[in-house]
Image (cartoon, rainbow, N blue to C red; front, side):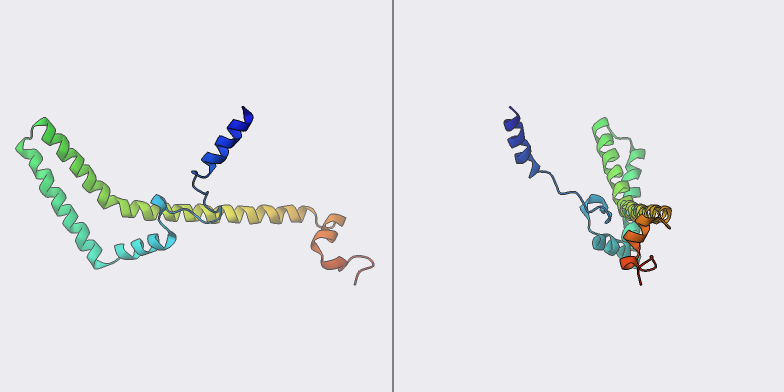
Length: 145
C-alpha cells in the first residue's frame, strides 16, 4: 500500500507548479517584475488617462439605463457589466500596489535575516568559536600572525 502511495505522490509531484524563489516576490496574476514595471509606466502616460476617462464614460452610459427600469434578467446583466467595468478600472492599480507591498515585505524579511545573523555573531565575540569561525586563519589569536 505504501508503495502505491509513493508512486502516486511521484506522479502528482510533476503537476505541482515549482515554488517561487524565496527572495524574489511573485507578481500578482503570474506577471513578471518587468511586466509590472511596464504596466506602471503605461499608467503614467497620457494615453492611459484618456483610456480610463473613456472607460468611465462608458460606465456612466451603462449606469443610466438603471433609471429606465429594467426587468430582472436585464438588471442582473447590467450589474455584472458594471462590476466588470469597475474591476477593469481598478485592476492595474491593485496589481502594482500588491507587487510593491510584496517587494517591501521581501526587503523587510531580508533585513531581519541580516540583523539576526549579526546578532548571532555578536554573541560569539571574544569566544574561541568566534576566533575559529570569523577571524581569518587565526589572525589576532595567540600563536597567529
